[in-house]
Image (cartoon, rainbow, N blue to C red):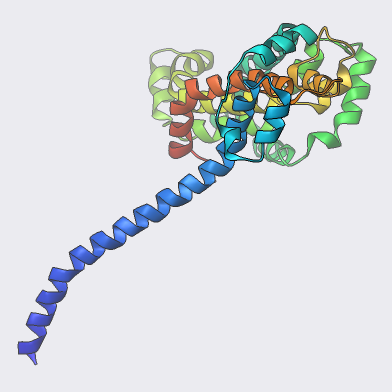
Length: 298
């Protein structure tokens, strides 16, 4: 029985690598086709929005929306962008959004990282209960606390201001959790070596922990910037005029004005989207690195 088995095994060994190469090629084609399909679904509306912003002929824009020409900038023009600035103080709303998001992200990085550092490195009574409470707060929707929070800020006289849009959101449970997950992965030997050299807790946090945490800092910055750049409900509830209103509320007001021009609306939406894309492009390397290295560990 040994005679026929040896040639069969050698033939199988000769065929298997080629078949495996063919299978891997088809698998790669399938993966790329799947990626292209989902990329088209997610990027298609974005491309249509940007292309439509450069079409100043409203009738042609509406006629081409249902065809492939919606993806092609035929007769591009900047007239829609000029119309946005003529009909509304766009620069004021852009400044308001930048101030609010920068305040929340900047303050949040300091507050959330310090809370997470205390939870990850210090041992004190109630630490586990506090951590469980923070994790539990992640699942509570903002809409559930919006009305009580509105009553509270109204009692404090904060309505129609920058700080009413910033201070309630500086402490962010999910950001604390992300920082905590990253900090517990940093070896405690670093702290012990620094303590031998005479460094206190504050010096260890500032000089050792934070420089090692650039990936999670980038991740938290991007997630918080995306969340509050597109926030609508709370700014609508606490602002009364153009002075402190961000882009999201202004977009709703602009879209409700007559005559309703789709080209102008697309130009407004495009200018509102560009800053977010720039932030993501600037920090995407650290963002992906953080997701692949730390992720959400149990």
